[in-house]
Amino acid sequence: MPNYRSHLSPWFQPLNLVVNRKLARRPFLNILIPTLLVSKMSGGPNTILILATMLASRGINVRLISTNTPVDPDSVALAAHLMKLSGIDALPEGLVLIDGNDRSVAIEIGADDLFMATAWWTAQIAKYSVGLTRHTKFLYMIQDCETLLHASSTDYALTLETYGLPHVPIINTRVLRDHFVSTKIGQFSDRAFAKEAIVFEPAVDRAFFHPMPRKARKAKNKLLFYARPLSGHRNLFQLGVAALQKLLEERVISSASWEFLALGNEAPLLSLGKRAVLVPLPWQGFAEYAKTMREADVLLSLMLSPHPSYPPLEMAACGRPAVTNTFGAKTEEVLAKLSPNIVGAEPTIESIADRLGFVMNRVNATRWRGDTLSYPSTWDQSLKPILPKILAAMDAIRAG
Image (cartoon, rainbow, N blue to C red; front, side, top):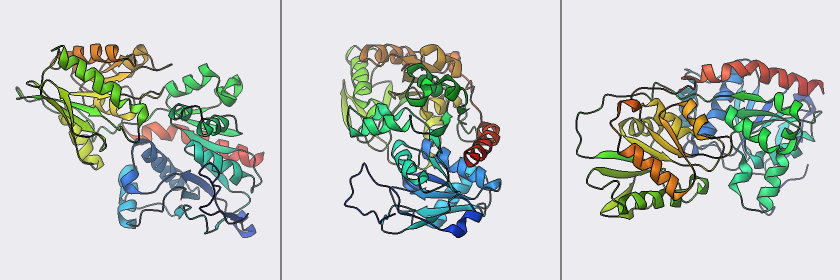
C-alpha cells in the first residue's frame, strides 16, 4: 500500500498498512479509535478503552490505533486513565497503543489481523484495511446513529454506507439497536443480521454517580445544562437556551431561586433574560465532573439521537431529575423505564420548557429521591456478558 499523506481529502484517509508475513503467527485485534488524547476522552471513547482492556486481559492481542490524533505524549497520564477506567493496577501485556495519525509512517499488520471500527470514518478505514487480510468483515462498535451528525452531504453518504458494509455490530443500548431495526438502515433491514447484533447496556459507575445528602435549604438551586454549541450540534444548545428563556420570560422560574451552569466547556457566558445568566464551567476531570453532577439539583441534557446519552443516566443515578428529549425509539415511556428520574420531552421549545418547568418547580419532591437507574453499576456487569459473543464473532470472521 502506498504512503498516504496529508494531501488526501478527509474522506479518504486509509491507514498506511504493510503486511508482514511473520505477524500471521501472532494476529492482533486492531481497534481503530479517533483519539488517544486523555483531554479528548468522554463516555463513548472511554467505553472503547474499557472493552479493549478487557479483551487484552483475556489474552487477546489488542492494538489501539489512534487514527486522527497522536497518542497522548503523557504516557503516564494515559496509562493512569486506562487503569482507572478499568479498575486495574497494571495494563495487560497484550495491549499496545499505536499512533496511526501520521500516515507517512507504516504500521505492520498480519494477514490474520482483525479490525474493529468505533466511528463511521474509522469504519471507512476498516473497509480498506480488511482488504489486506484474509478476512471480509470487521467488528463495528456502534454508539450512535451517526448519519444524524450530518446534513445531506458526502459525510452523510459515507456514514450511511458503513452500516451496509460486511460487519459484526456491537451496539451500545437496546434503544439504539431498536432504532436501527425500525429504520432498516443498511444491513439492519435483514432480520437475521439484526437478531445477531451484539448489544450491551452501558454502566454508570455508582462509585462516582450516587445520591448525596441534600442540604435543608440553599440560597439557590443549581440547574446544569449540558451544552456543546461548538462541537455537539446534536446536543441542541439553542433549543435548550430558548426553553430556559421562555421559562424565565413567563416567570415559571426565576434567577432569584436558580443558578444556571453550563457543562461541556464550550458555552459562552450568556444572558438568559430576567437577570439570569448561563455561566460556563471550566473543563473538568472525570472525578470533578461526577462531583458537579452529584451537587446539582436538575440536569438539562439534550441529544437528537436514539441513544439516551450518558449525562441523563448519570444524573438519574445521582437520584436527581434529568430532562432530555425523545427521538424515534427513545420515547418518554422508554426513558421512564430506564429511570423515573429521566423525564422525556419532544425536541421543541414548548415541550422542553413544559417538562423542565414541571421538574424545576418540584425539585424537592420525594419522587426524585434515590438511585432508580436500571443500568449496570460496573463495566464488568455491562461488558462481561458480551465478551464470549465478541470472541465467537472473531472466530467466525477468521473461519470465513
